[in-house]
Image (cartoon, rainbow, N blue to C red):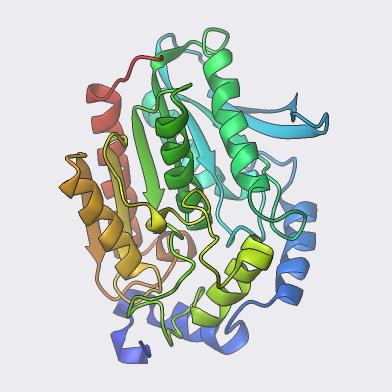
Amino acid sequence: MKITKEMIHPELRTTGTLLRTFWPEYSVQKFAYCNKFMDSFFKGHAFTKEIEYQQLYTQRPDGTPLRLCVYAPKARRADVPGLVWFHGGGYAIGVPEQDYIFVERFVLASGCIVVMPDYRRSMEAPYPAALDDCYQALLWLKENSVVYGVRPDQLFVGGDSAGGGLSAAVSLLARDRGDVSIAFQMPLYPMLDDRMITASSQDNDAPIWNTVSNIAAWRQYLGDDYGTDNVSKYAAPSRETDYSGLPPTITFVGSIEPFRDETIQYVDHLKTAGVPVTFKLFEGCFHGFDIACPDTLVGKQAAAFLMDGFMHAVAHYTKQQP
């Protein structure tokens, strides 16, 4: 799906052109470069004075530390939702603090507690390392819900891009294991399908994330399983065939990005299984447009759409823990 300049939303056109000119795609080398920058610029910095930020550590089963970033309102409330949020970056790059804009909105709007795991990136360890870390963070929040005033029946998960894929994967794993209940999920423009068999995922040269970047990221995440039938549904949730019992969902995606079709298919599968879904397709928008261009009208519309859905979930969705 070749993307012409005219196909890009007018508000995003200048930014999109610059991005395609100076950073047309990602490679393994660029993943490594980005991680050095992310680690030095973002890690350990709150980037917000409006809410409390702290770093905690929990131990993985192998004894190594898993860093958790915990965000809370300065004036704590009781009986608030708990949200585990997973950052994006193609499973290969990024740190939790990069998504502070999302976190700030959620916390200020609802008083919720947000936990963000510094999950292992595929440059450090391939699947299932990231999923294991994200799931452990969810269990940590469940176990510590009373300490933070979190309602145990209102645990949410969410994330953007690869973080959206991890949200979908964690929701599948929680449903199948039955040891923790998720009341609501927010997988934004999620990275779901390693097979890249949809029209939007093939020959796509859109800004920020395209087919070349997607191939590089899936190869890195899946390792030797890439291109085989050995890929788990927990690595690529589009491989699931049973979508029943998954939590109510909100998501959105741009019409010109690689993940358009797999997101729409995911939404359709959820609806067919009877799962409540709120979905919006943003015409002419590329991957991560709401982050790259937050001050545009369409960027603000995406943020408002997400926050309306989030606050609806806060008011209406609960699920008792097993």
